[in-house]
Every structure is written in structure tokens, then in C-alpha cells.
Length: 124
Image (tube, rainbow, N blue to C red; front, side, top):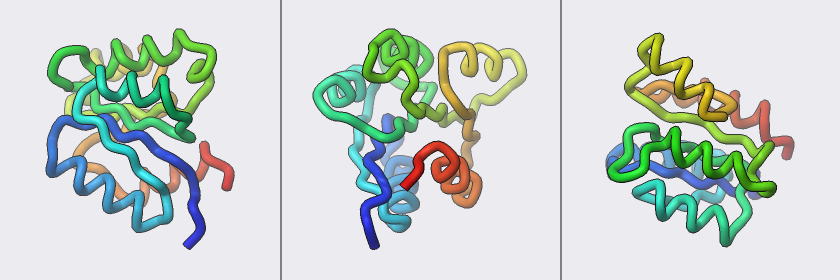
């Protein structure tokens, strides 16, 4: 299967990371993993990704702050960034979307929804 794109997944839960990685790799995406926002930002700076999947609840810097930092750079100003969260309550949903993400994907992750939304943003 041809490479469909490079995706950075920032997720601190090892089980969630395995699940998302499996879903994406099974569809032909190349996945890079970061277990906290600081590592994710460092990887994003030194590499180029077609999409970033950002967990919101991370140790240290949260995913909203990391997304704001990415959006402040020329490289990721218009990049595809999805928020992954189990905390999609109404007030936080607005705050998450205001941080600059393109989509909010709630956990447990619906594989079909995630893959369809990625295809919408990543033209292969």
C-alpha cells in the first residue's frame, strides 16, 4: 500500500497510542509518536507532517497550548491538526476549537470517522 502521508500523534496513553498508530498504519500512513507536547513540538520543528493528532490532556503542556504554539509558526499555520480528547464537554469544546484545531475527535476514537476526516484534509 502506498504511503498516504506522515502523521505525528501526540498522545500520553500508551494504549491509545497503539490503537491510533495501528488504525493509521493499517491505512498506509507513516506514524511518528510523541508522548508529551514538548516532544511533539520538537518533532514538528525538525520534521514535516501532513497532519498532527494532538491529545488535549497531556502531562506538562496541554494539547491546546501546544496547538497554539504550532499555529504561531509559519510551517504549521495552516497545517491539519486534530484534537483527540475524552473531555468534549460543551465549554471545553469551544476552548479546544479556539486553540486552532481543525477537527475535534472524541475518545473512544471512531476509526471510520477519523480516517474519513483525515482523507478530507490530506489529498493523496
